[in-house]
Image 1: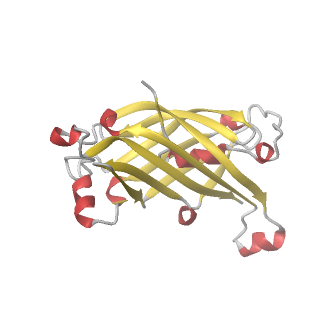
Image 2: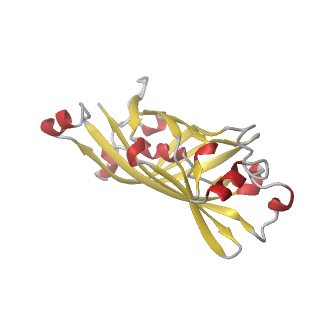
Length: 212
């Protein structure tokens, strides 16, 4: 069963276009390589929430890397690869974070990173994209779909470009979805049961990207 996902995979959000933001589809370019965009980590968040008994507990991953090629005129040509450092998990409780890094859950020592790599992207509405790709957590890889919402794309005026170090364009996005942790072996032994820790993990992404 395919799962809807937005993990870091977050950065796929930047696959929306200025034309999409204005409600018009730009012409498709053929044979041209997509442009590289930079994800602004200081204005990007990867958050999650999972139930503990009946109470939702939230957390974040603070360390991640995004490689993004984005074609503003042909988003179908865009590509993204996201790598998240599992040890950067933060639920604001050191004891709980250490348990999540342990072999009971993520086993961060053996599997220090989780990754997402896109295989396709398509526009489903003027301000919506749907990306498909391979998500790997621990030793399991599954195909997932990532719905993306475009908040806006802005061309910076020349004085502002100089103020921000030559950045000419900025784009912002959000995405939300759910994954089943059991499909990736996150939670083994007694922790595979869902009475204490729920199976469904809600993920929310806020992402900002720019280009020069």
